[in-house]
Image (cartoon, rainbow, N blue to C red; front, side, top):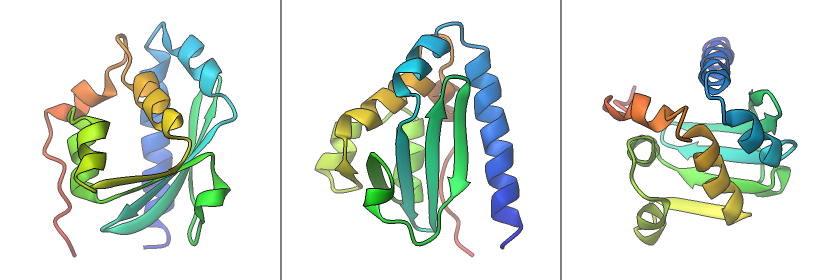
Length: 137
């Protein structure tokens, strides 16, 4: 597992930045997020990824044993809820149903979704046609 996760993160980072580069409005949205950090703590399967935004896109870093203080915001979520959000579910409904817990700057979560799901990029629309579920080991 130690080699697989870095490879998956590197591949995801490359793909996300490629898609963001195709969006003409992304630079202005990313500029507002530059330097901000979002910790994504997935509970099942358990892993933590630090998303760091910069003017050209984002960087994904595996951050085992991270704490909410390591980022501007920390999102705790399970894989099914993450898939639902990528498919277009509202942040508010996921939070209301206790499927999404945010520590820190809630506005960063909304700004992140707006940046990667802007009119020219629509990563969520690209991913929305897939079924995102964790099948387990």
